Every structure is written in C-alpha cells, then in structure tokens.
Amino acid sequence: MSASKKRLLIVDDSEAIHLDFRRILCPERVSSSELDELEDAVFGEAPPSRPLDGEPYEVDSAFQGLEGLEKVKAAQAQGRPYALVFLDYRMPPGWNGVETLRHLREVAPSLQVVLCSAYTDYSWQEIAQEFGETRLEELRKPFNSQELRRMAHRLSGST
Image 1 (cartoon, rainbow, N blue to C red):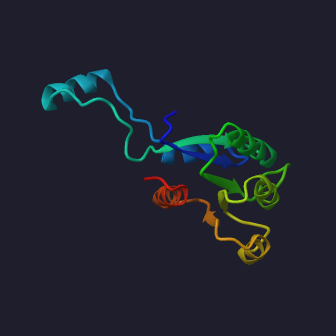
Image 2: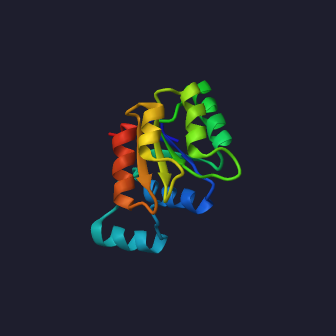
C-alpha cells in the first residue's frame, strides 16, 4: 500500500459491516478492457492510472476486540500506526466496544476512535465521563455513506 494512505482499522464482529466499510471507503474502479478501448477511441488514450479521490485509505479488519488490540500494537511496532479505528459496541462473545476501548487507551492513548452501533448498553454521557476525551466520536448504524466518508476524512487527517 502507498505510504500516503491513512491506515484505518474496523473492529466489528460482522463480516458484512467490514464489507460495507470497504465498499464505501475503498471503492474499486471497475474496468472492462472493451470499455477502456472504446473510451480511448472516443476520448483519446487515458492518462496513467491514479487513485480515485475517495481512496486515501488502507483498511484493515479485526473481528473481536482482542484481535483489534493486537493489530494496533503490531501497527505501532512496525512504525505504521492506525490513524483511526471504527469500533463496534457489541461483539459477542468477546470484549464489547467500551472494554476494547479501555485496552486501546492503555497502548495508544491518542488514537482517534469512532464507536459504532445501532444500539448500546452505555449512554454516550457515561462513555464521555469515563474517557473524558475529545478523540472519541459515535457513528450510528445503519450509517450513511457520505457521513462515513466525511468522518473518516476529517478524523484521520486525510488530505
């Protein structure tokens, strides 16, 4: 992956959610050689391929909190830390999002985290009181694609 891409980590027990994040944040440019040839004939030869404006991310997946914690530790050890973590509130049978966040704060206190869920066992006030920080936000499921892209861009420091 390009060094200019911001690294994001999705920690969620649902494979479908991981696919949604990738579909929204890392859209693949679908091309057909026949269509490419037709476009070249009509518009001239295409310039060299470059990433789409919406592709500044390298997205990794973890399906439980402990796995997410290990990935954050490994990324730091490699000198390639994550810019942002999207963290599900509920991930049975392992740690929930708040428990995972407690562990993440021990190893990466300044890591930007977005807690995601359709529902929660905690009020946002309880979470804010415990963590008392501004590097924590919430994204409600089902999430809006544009809202997710804007949030990822703003919180990861993408340019």
